[in-house]
Length: 366
Image 1 (cartoon, rainbow, N blue to C red):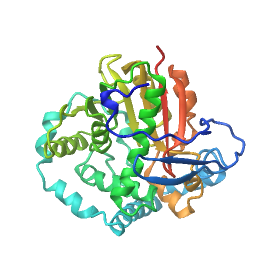
Image 2 (cartoon, rainbow, N blue to C red):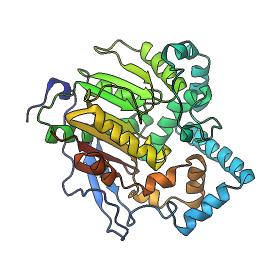
Image 3 (tube, one colour):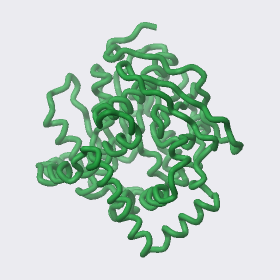
Image 4 (spheres, helix red, strand yellow):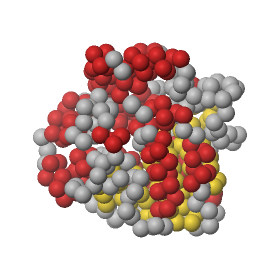
């Protein structure tokens, strides 16, 4: 199959053979080592653990114990503060100037973008109003928006600890994710063209900009529930060199976007689903199916239940994680492949694209 102009921007390397699809089986599984490389960087190995999901998630005794501890409000307050300090400390130890980056946004003109992008008629789902990520107001605050980029870079650095720099870690993590998308689309879609892309849960636009760079001939739209995040995304885009197709930003709910059916070739949902209850995960995947054209590709990137590293997190770290992610158990208990299948998707694949994260791709049938 020949590459279309929109898919000729980065050379493609092959995903390793023998990668099995994710399942919801409860039995223990043998370790699996997955090899994957970007066009320029050899990454090494990504190893699956022996469990279907970490013991600290779901309905296991240790999971219930952690939930009970977190439900004690005085302890929760301490854990929430501790989780935040761990994030900031990790970032700054890895040359990510968290406080400086946040200050720059808070002192910028981002607030001027808010009214041009905010939909005052939008009703926020109940789960979105919960405290998470250490913010009492969740993502509906300027502080969360100002710290989002630094938090994302910190996540990337933790995911690729052996990279020589944050930039290299970002290249590896994003490069493998984009590669998985490109290869799936080329394999299962009759036309290789990607003309329209929707990035659901785009935050401040990091994933959106990577999609736009990878597919420069496509029209890219970033959609998020937080107008504060979108204001920052829009400001950042205004401050960069013009694109052939400027990115559009939409304040909307990924469960019910209001966008026309069959209007996209690719729908991406990156690092969003672990923040959602199961009902929202199901609704977003159904909405993506509605929005995609026949032959279109969905790409879900998030924490991998099978990641050996995540399965072996120390108690302190997984307790801190659960204190800032109220729906993490629902995410880990959701059978993602079954959810995709029930929505109507075919050609479902799931692979580790870095030591902590999986990318699941699937196709809307013709």
